[in-house]
Length: 500
Picture (spheres, rainbow, N blue to C red):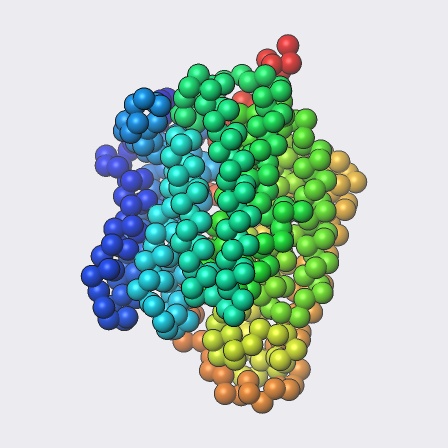
């Protein structure tokens, strides 16, 4: 494996991936709920510290996989335990660890029953999410990708809302269907790529167009369900509405990004001919998602459903940026993935916090919240503006780069994509006006209490990255630059060679 030197001197990626799992095992020995929460917070804090150290030692000047680890696992099938990160995946390793820490803070008061089971499921979930972004063996990637369904299913099905069983089954069946297709495509690549599951090796192989065509379709459905793209999106609102706050944060902040990450890691570099062949249809589907998701959000009277449908629209910007196949679009799509994880995670946190106090998510039950919870309303105003991609926020930089990339692809598509940005302003400002402004029409709201220190710390931590990416995005763009350039060069070179 051609990789950059591990400058840390110890298996940092294995530690990052396995620390949450070790924490989950330790939780099994505890009985007191407060001790369980404190240990879960300590474990996620340690994991976050390790990812910060990883970023500090990351070399942005190379596209090679860094901090690479490889151990033989199943020699008969050439399967290895192999981990590594590049300028694309390292951002999502950090995002997963950061939002895992936020989830523990968000669940401090929200989860009152079976606290041990919930925290164990959350930590196991974090291990599997981190494993997806670090895996350099396709079989290992699939194990992490597939196993992730189990703790998420439990989080929704056990700690979710009144209709949680239906939502959990729907989530499981949709994503499992995609996983089956991914498995079929993976087996085809294994045999066509020299009987190897090594991801970097598979990226260098030249597959016939027929093979690429069918594998791309299998991968596309698997990743499109995860994003989710239109028309594979119907599981998302139910899952979000029924999931507890931490579940919604994980779904929006990390799980949706795994679909887009799959396109970046597999479809573009391994299937370049098929990627170019299907680029226009995928761009058009993304455009439908941008506008359709915006209109659906505009029609919602449930806070959680509004944020869920807005995710469909915003993730449409991600996929349209990836498939215009230029530097601006790819960088914008990746940065939008990161920013969307932060901003939408914050919005779901805010919805969860107010639900804990009022036990309602209907927008019509609110009004005048600014008079009752001024600190909360300040946070809601900030992240509402951030979700609108106001200049100075991370989403603005991501959407701007995406639109620049899309403009180079098609001026008409770029013009239509702007409609989605206008729709987001419409439904978000309308929501804020109805929830926070005016008179207090529901006297039950007067019994609500404002944010405490724990909740303020969580929101300020999220706001920090919104402003950092918005005002000074260069560190994030520099991290991904070499990997994005190499990805495009690799894709274009293979298209030229195979075409000849």
